[in-house]
Structures are given as structure tokens and as C-alpha cells.
Image 1 (cartoon, rainbow, N blue to C red):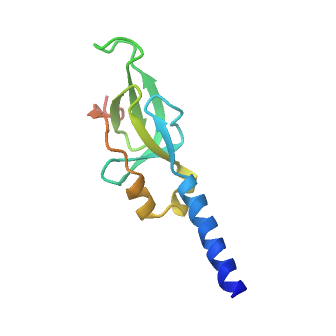
Image 2 (spheres, rainbow, N blue to C red):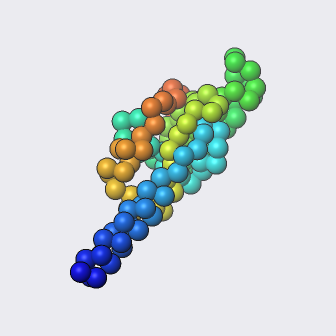
Image 3 (cartoon, rainbow, N blue to C red):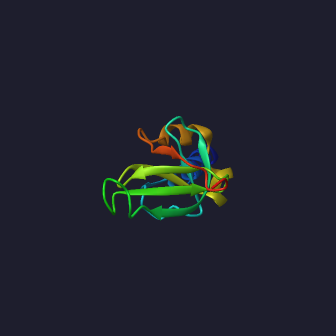
Length: 116
């Protein structure tokens, strides 16, 4: 009986740690070095840069461009909720947890940084 309880507690602790690796943030937050969860539950490449768009038509401090290691960019309005996981922790996060953590909104694809 004690072994079963200990195993159950250990498994619950592992699940809590795993879920804790999926962190909520906002688009203009500290995203570099993280991978983002898309609304469909897939993952982006690692974020390499977050650029505040001072000349955006909506005005300064309203939008950011997030650049990914694969050369893609996504433009987000400020305060769009995102879910991130540190790139180094990817192997420890389950696909089910990632899908469950997927945000409801997303930004718009922008011109690739590696082709500009």
C-alpha cells in the first residue's frame, strides 16, 4: 500500500513540475530562449528576438514582432496572451499538456527575417 501511495505522489509531483514548465506570458514579455505554443497546440521554433514596433500604424508601444530561429516572424499586439516553454525543457513537457495549454489567440505572420 505504501509503495502505491508513494508512486502516485511521485507521479503527481512529476506532472505538476511538467505543467509548471508551461508558462503564461504576454507577447511583449520575456520570450527569448523560449518556444511558444500555437493555438493549434503545435510549437514554434525558439524565439531569438522580440522587437517593439515604434513605427506601427496603431502607434508606439502597441505591437511587437517576434522572430524565431527558423527565420519566421509573427506580429503581435501588446498584451496578447502567449504560453511559453523554455527550449531546454521541451523534452520534459507532454504533447497533451502542450495542447491543453494552447492560447486562443495569435498574431499575424510577418515577412521572414532570414529573407529580408
